[in-house]
Length: 234
Image (cartoon, rainbow, N blue to C red; front, side):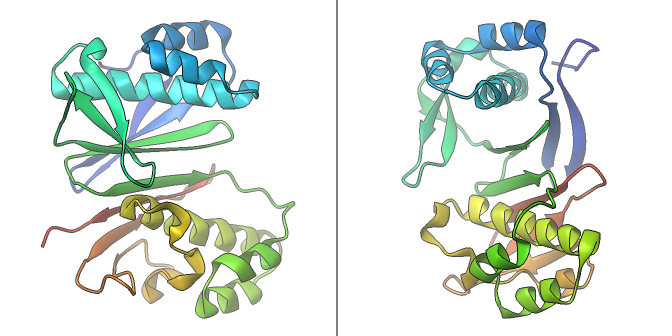
């Protein structure tokens, strides 16, 4: 479906076979009601269980945009799609009850959502609105490796905020691409050294999986920090 002035997502980036959509998560009652009508029974039930209005809105708008765009890419009706969960909770799409060769990942923060869709088997995307009122050094000591902590420790003010969220978006995208959740500690690996010093893309290997190569892309822009990661073919 081609976005119109009435849709709430837009194509945002396209690289290496992956399409990344930006989802506008600003409150809009009419838009939210229409998005809710796109969901299936189980998704509507899930949305009703959210106690937070904001969390419910984020889920409904992101899931409806995902369902619409997956159906478009697969050339099928939205109602034929369903979703399953892998071992560590990462979702995958089914067509008429059977898994298909298409991968996706969703992230949202504040008024921004990102959806990555690709034919790659393992993909992760992350978006983070930058909030300065956090204990950045304290959190950083728990989630960053030695060189990452040194980089964060040398910065102050706005620069520290930028570094913190840039690093976090890249690490989160890698963890989501791997698909094991936080069973893997984010402090147990560091982003590629060149990316610590400003490069926007790089190749990465998890310490416990040295035979697998991953691509990591820094997609950050003035509104938010963001990153995309995916496993490279052997």
